[in-house]
Length: 230
Image 1 (spheres, rainbow, N blue to C red):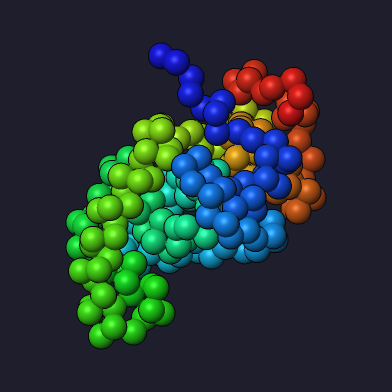
Image 2: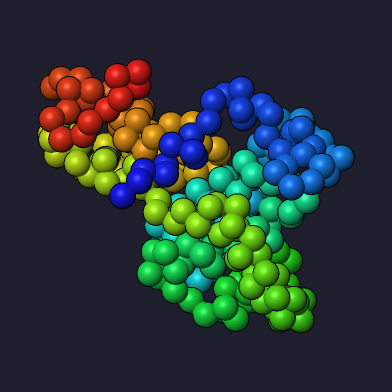
């Protein structure tokens, strides 16, 4: 099987020249540009929307994590000026619920998106539900196409679960590292570093925070192969 993941890792220079910043994507020129800081803020808002919808639907964290990866990848192909982050975020939740086999009905996801979008105004949310259903059905295909139908997402969690026992790290260190990974999903870190590198970084952050010193360097792992330039 061909490894398609390499296409989803970018340089810091790439991140300064995204479609949202340059005002053009792979199909059209939107003519609208934004500063990198504004794009970061919009990505944060979109991923916060993802987490709030997933929480509203009582879905697994993996759904939120996968949806955020889809979201960040999408905006390396399209501009935030052309596609509203909340609408794309909702479509990413719909897709992720299927990929992670934690499905909810289209109506349920549309209602949750509507509710979160209007900040809990139940009457307005109910009135907007059908609009969200139409949006989600349309944008699900758009997200699939722009993500090149690559739905196989590898998260850092499995690497944390492998590294922690290998190095005899306490459970609270692994939990703290997992929390750090969840926080980074609101940023495009998943576009810059492979999941095993993110896992090691999160564990070192947790170790530093708790003043815990590992028996040896995590880069000496016998079970997780880390790139030489990590």
